[in-house]
Image (tube, rainbow, N blue to C red):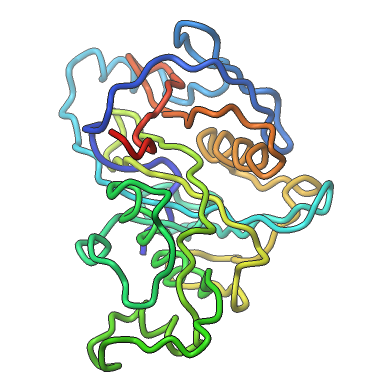
Length: 279
């Protein structure tokens, strides 16, 4: 469905606190959050002065919609590749921008799939987001993230399966939710006419089944060597989440998941605690 960068609904989850974090995006300069939750580097604040002026005039606030996105990486070092696509130039929301596959959460994502495995490491809020990330990835770029079902019987007739369930069942796969790592959360700035509150996940290319292909939602889909040939345009939130995903993969990321958001038209990075199972 929709290729997402910026993310989904008004924050209704657990409280957050400021986060100290420093990451370097591929092909870019270091992005830095400093103590006390102060603003990021000026180049990350891509909200124009005109938009800031409208913001101070108390514009109508669009309620963001919950969404999910999947960061798929494979390879090592300078040969690291990212599965990404470019939004068509005719769309109103972020035309021509490179994004991870992802989109808004649907009602069906609240229900366990008959072809899924794992997920005990995620609370219910993130479990439905993980399903949405896998579903949107299949819909937008045509790949599955799973493992062989080894003949596990599906307790439902084929006609009763949702399209994404049927896609996994048809390949003899179980959707492997347990291979997904929660990366963080991002909320689209208030002045934007279409807003998302997105949860980002990471998976390794070794768990991907199928060859990526372009769709009506994303063009130029493929595995891109982002360290040797940086993608452009590539929004700040996408750079930030990619940098954290790379750090998670390398085992060097901070323990706390970040919340990337805007406060008074300035970028902020806070700690997002919604991944805790005991909340």
